[in-house]
Image (tube, rainbow, N blue to C red; front, side):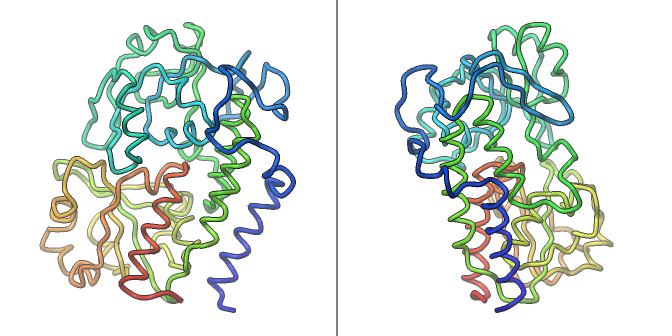
Length: 340
């Protein structure tokens, strides 16, 4: 057995042990199954519940009924535990490439408050616009939105834990599963959350390992020719590469994400590049804008056309979309280099 295969099997086994899924996976309804409005899992316990989130304790007196969505990443968690119908408004970018036809149709029916995204992919929205929706829960905290301001209006907020900066020394898929469990607690859907985790765990374990010895860099391309960013040890991008047995060339960096210039990229010269983007450009435009300079054109991955543009949420933050991204990366590597 190779070291990368052993690492992947150990990862999956560790996730099952962490969450104790074996005994609970069969007891819940299928994720997203029909339920009466406001019905709570029998295993969820009584409200109020307190959920830890970014060094904060978020207390919910009842399952949220009016949710404002300020980030596209939680969509597949909400859908997976059967509570997407609680979203009364959304803001930000929700590229079609993330979602099934059915899910795109349901999202289109949710009123949009703002689609103003800056060059680094951050939502621009006024807090008063959010508060005007009378939410009891807000998902996402873009600049200008604060927990204190929302609490004054009777709303709590949850931020993707990937952005909290407390993922430990190296990210893993345990972070994704903990995120889903947290949502299950917040909405009183713990059985649905366990079922969703189980299905994702099975998909992670089924992805073929890459040939040994491959290295990669995962970059974020700012729109408009802005700076490049690279993802380090605490990013979910590293968890994806670890699951595939590919070494993140910048896993030695403690930061989740950091601005990077040509010199470190040229020095690392990884076998492949994954370029994250927000979906405003075509794949060809993403590559041209981010890697088309004379200096970066000499990268081996660029010369070999070993560059995979990937929508941002397929790698960050922790959500079921990251498992979709893992499968996409794995299929691309397998088609180009074969499996281990």
